[in-house]
Length: 110
Image (cartoon, rainbow, N blue to C red):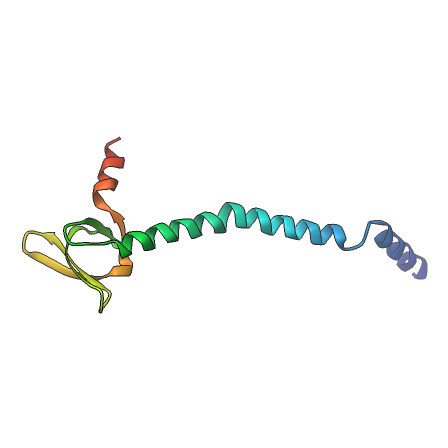
């Protein structure tokens, strides 16, 4: 049993230790950041810029998939009023408006 333990210890010592493992972990994290985290952060910036630039008359799509036109922007309450049909106005939190409806329609037409 002693010889098996010594052989295992020698094999571990000859393999190079923990340095290759650390380098591999750093490499995996870098790849994940480059392909997953970074693009998501860019997308979030675009959404925030769109939400902050909302004004009356903009055509929008809410997070629930409701298309409408912005009728009023209330910056103090962080809400917008969206007309979804003639005479039907709903209040929506500004954080739940994600897209420009006109741009979405143009992309679907292509």
